[in-house]
Image 1 (cartoon, rainbow, N blue to C red):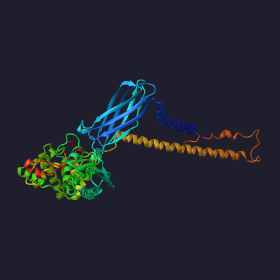
Image 2 (image 1 turned 90 degrees about the vertical axis):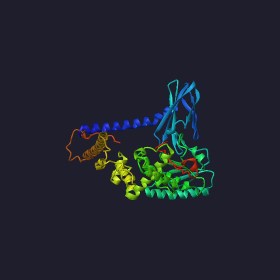
Image 3 (image 1 turned 90 degrees about the horizontal axis):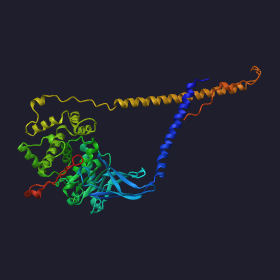
Image 4 (image 1 turned 180 degrees about the horizontal axis):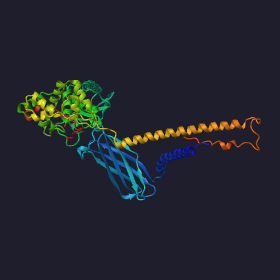
Length: 498
């Protein structure tokens, strides 16, 4: 006879398997039963977008057993760290009611959903009898529905335009294709998911699509969080195709290559201006003026965002462009690409990325650049003598809890394997004993001693076991005397909404 613990283990495994099946069946059947017996039933639901002003949500509900009291709508913006909930009361409570919520998109510029945003939402409804119902999630796709858009796509990018023929769209698309290739070469990487470029016919249409309180000099905008950008193109020979389009596409490509919020504004915008195929002369003039007056903007003042003042913002773009050009000229394309690649490393700041790729941090880069331009140093002799911080090892991504859970999982897997092996061994031995018993029962009588009755072989055979189972620049306004040469510049409010 085999050890009793094996039989106990077999029974425990069977009980555990049965319990799991029971729990899964309850989890699967419960929602269906609950939904079928819920007295709160939805008759209709809708969401109406009036871009860029508001979205009107409605849900019509009927209650078979009580009176509806209130509903709550839950909103989540994909690509943005923004969620909200709003409660709507039934006044007075009634068995049938239509709940409505008017969501004002212009109330807060930080919560404005740009074109390309997907808003997920759902309702919960309660009644006087204590019943509640949660409606399945729905999605609203934010589009500028003021216009009838045409679309053209290839691979990972799509362009969208209106009021022009397909020849215009094809012309722009070919320029986008060439620009993406050039930008990807300079950044050392290409797109990994789709982007959308929205082309407005004039500045008024474009301004109407922007978040509230955006500077009037913005002429192009990129939202990397939703992989979309917007520019103004009035004619096929417009300079915006050589300036604004490469600028905004650079933002979209760059932010698919790096971690969010890693890039300083001066680096992000500097790369965008560097990749433009056209630079207005006023951009260089503004930078030279700052050099002559020895009033370049300190990098720590343009790390998080650019100035609100149009003239200082224009200098910030010019200065960032020149500094990024200095990076390429001094360190070369491979090392700048290495820097961008390092910006994908988690738990590491931009200074550490700089040290890893270029061998110096931002403070020493700024000082070195100033000296190359004949400007005053930005670091003292003592600061220059201080050694750079040693590279820090990456933090262990596995904390103590993760390790314990991993070990527990390994133990459970090994235990399960051993248990199944034990059951298999037990079954094999049981079959073997049954075979011996069968053979003994058919032994010739002249060999087996005569007994008063047949031998009780079955008492020696164990029971058969149970089966175990640009602010981007774009339209910089000069003094009235110079407005005929007014440069336009763009901004990237994806990380800096101003």
